[in-house]
Length: 65
Image (cartoon, rainbow, N blue to C red; front, side, top):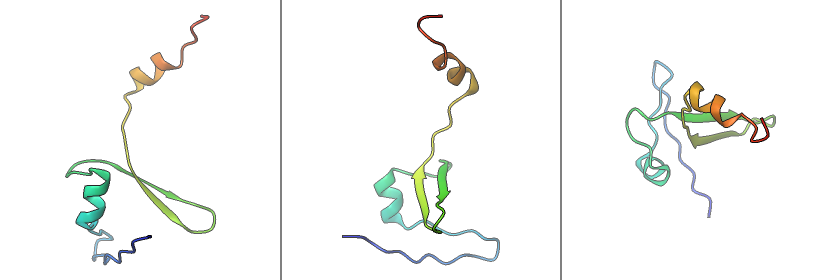
């Protein structure tokens, strides 16, 4: 079953994610989230992960090098 939440947007454009969503995604204070706006207007929220550039570069090397 799809759950629907309706948080309010405050005067600075901020909203509070409902606790049930934070718990489900294991989001804690200070964590990053990823918001994707799809062409039809749907917004998808995911827990974000920051990957340092040095790790990203290492993972892009080919084993055949």
